Amino acid sequence: MKIELICTGEEVLSGQIIDTNAAWFGDVLMNVGLELQRKTTVGDRMEDLVSVFQERSLHADVILVNGGLGPTSDDLSAAAAAKALNVELVEDSGWRAHLESWYSKRDRKMPVSNYKQCLLPEGAVLVDNPMGSAPGFRVKINNAWLFFTPGVPVELKPMVMDQFLPFITEEFGITDAIRLEKLVTIGHGESTLADELSAITIPEGITLGYRPSPPHVEIKIFARGNLAISAMPNYIKDVKKSLDTALVTDRFPSISEEVHTLMMESGKSLSIAESCTGGMLTSQLVDFPGSSTYLKQGLVTYSNTAKQKILGVKEDTLQNHGAVSLEAALEMAMGARSLLETDFALATTGIAGPDGGSDEKPVGLVAIALCDNNTSWVQTIKLSNRSRNLVRVMSCAVAHDMLRRRLIDEDPIVDYPFISRLDSQVIHVD
Image 1 (cartoon, rainbow, N blue to C red):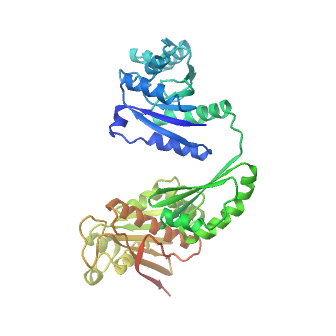
Image 2: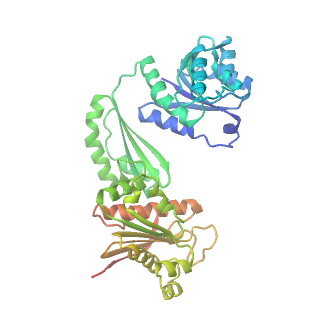
Image 3: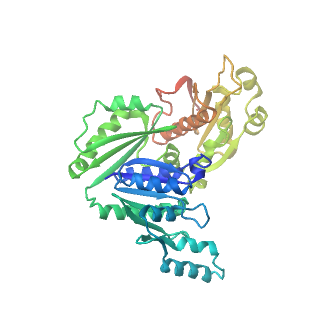
């Protein structure tokens, strides 16, 4: 089955907004064992819309058309579909009654422009939209079913999950058993991982996919059919063994969510002190509900004065070693932990760039420390030829991995082939 996506809108075509819908839709398909064959982006011009509907419907089996169902003059998807079919737009009386009732229950008058959203190509099958005023619809053009949805993500997503996927499953008789497992890694390149895993014999019916998305490379393992699914556990066991320290989670999309869950499960508390990461390390944990149960404070001590006055970093340390050093990171972490006597503390300090580096301390140099009540681990890493944001993102990943490994009783400091470690220390407190 060939599935395609047509995204409409001048703002998408011109790059004024990022097309997150396409990325989400492609991932959803992959998670159910289907593949997106092609994506086409087209502006709000009638001739272009009609042309792309007619042309792509000659090649695809199903096309999701996203956007252009709003009430304004530049929302042309329904009219373009009617023109491509050489039919008229007709009012769907059921949807009109639905909209009028919705406004009436809220003591509001329905705007005249909304009546446009009740017009569908003659013969179209209405697709319910429980989250918005524009219905979706599907029509058959040439060889393909075109399935139209609004562009608003909160409307698109339930329509895809609750109506699009069941429709194609029934229409095309998709019955094969499918299983998908995802393994998330850090610190290793896609090609390195592929080379390492190539030595493992892949059972029939299982395929591997790789998705780099810094700081991670996600490995997708598909099994299609019952025989492949039955072979999955042993194969995954071998893959995990080969990945070794590269693997950071097999249950969540990110290392930060893995750390969040481990902290929740541990009952331990955490303090964070940040300099170069500027709150990112803390924010990545606050993204998840329940983080307040363990995260007691996140301090952005950007200046040396803040490091001294808030965290108690010694002036001699800053003068003799600098703010970006093992010694400063260690004192930052120890100071943050002592403020509220938390079980753990993390600290980051570095030179994210693009300016501020020197021969001795180049851009991309970052010191990261982890402390608990009797041991501290601190390391300096060098993230060369990375953007300012990527230096921060990768630094957070390494910091989180140090804490993750400590929570599962493994050595917090490990080697990453794609990250240079310059120095490290482990300090035990009696």
